[in-house]
Length: 179
Image (cartoon, rainbow, N blue to C red):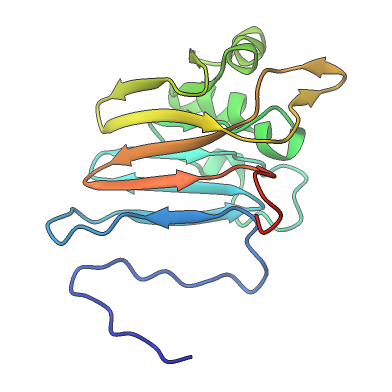
């Protein structure tokens, strides 16, 4: 396969030395502001543009592939794809430390609230919430979503409009076999 030239202003994405299980698609717009994408390990990412940063699925503590500690994470918002420990991870601790709301399926958001999250935004697939950076929307995903025997709502993908970019984090969907 040949390589393509990088467009001016396009973010440079370098793959980590191991497989990334979460899929990310970036909508390209020539006039877009810079979007910084930081891989946090497993399915976790930090998306930052300007003064806003969205963290998705921050499983750091106990994750052998985590490249950051929970106390290192600075963000304004958090989104969760589902309630499994390897996605919920450190979301509540990061929410408390940053005063960041957690966007998640209704039952998962309520669970995070019970655990002491700074704020939650309960949602359902198909729903979209406006944010200071754009929006967060949840999509349908085929997986399960529970933690310590408790059902935590429907698993979801996360679509976020941040800066002038749109990012789709698929979560752990089994929509079709190639995901």
